[in-house]
Length: 391
Image (cartoon, rainbow, N blue to C red; front, side, top):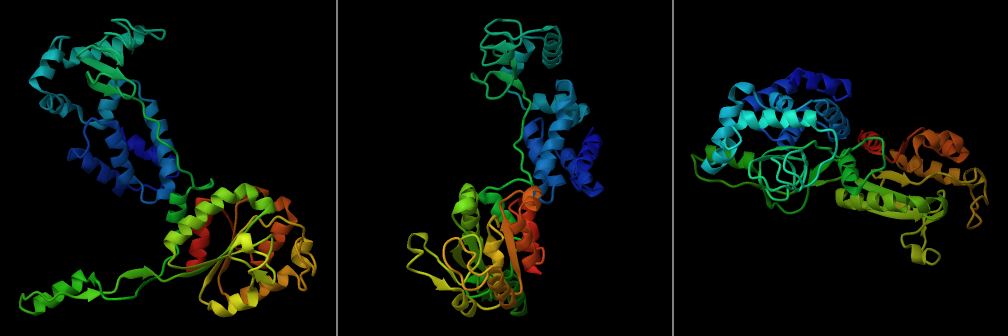
């Protein structure tokens, strides 16, 4: 059964190998999980999935494979070997639990009767003493009062079930949809360059062991500065107009970036890059930062990330005076080329779905200016952009 599960994962595009399958089988053999579908789900995902971006595919494959199982015996067959199922299960029961099960004829009789009533029942039932339903005294169902029943469904009310059967639906994650802050952080971590800076206040365990051994066992503690992400980032956000529908996801991206990058500066622009930027939208007309000054202040080893929909009139990119807010003496594309001459790595993150880019001329012009380094604001797009910046 687990071999079929392994094949289902491969068919779903999860890159699993025989080694992962053997790890899962060994864990089952060692009783790491026992008779619990939730535990089996998390354990199998830990064994089989090595990258969070495949969680969605794993969840879908897991659901497809296990929702087709026909009954309790099928779950038992997948979860635990039949030759030691009953002995292990009974071992964990109290004397009182054993007496309750025996009142119905034993565990085998309980399971057999459950399957029989599932086959006989043709409609929803509530409040009785025989069929599988809710709130009654039948030994099978949900929220009932029978002392030795099988619960069908989640969160039993009276905690009287001897065994639980519940089909789980696990939340999907996807590498092709817009993200929340947590998943954005995962993607941004691709852009890392560690360096040790500051005071020596972190224990260097390897060096301490080496030094202690050389010192004939006399403890010789070695300390090193804490490791920090040394990547430096300039983050430029398009604000206002057509970006209003994307405010929330941009806020999530900004929150994640502030957490992940110790050396980060952010500025705002509208539609396209011109001779000045701002940091405070309330005072944008009074406090402007000339782009020349920004490029001189922040060294060329900064990584530059633009976030915007790049959706505007083509004149705003290509012509002097094209800006909708002021008279720009030089075209926006001139300023973009100057910035790209200063900084080696520049990317543009676009919240507009990638399959819509070809319908907007300004997006095509912006992509050309950045030599194709425009990426969608999805998990996959962020990972690809961070991979490019980290080269």
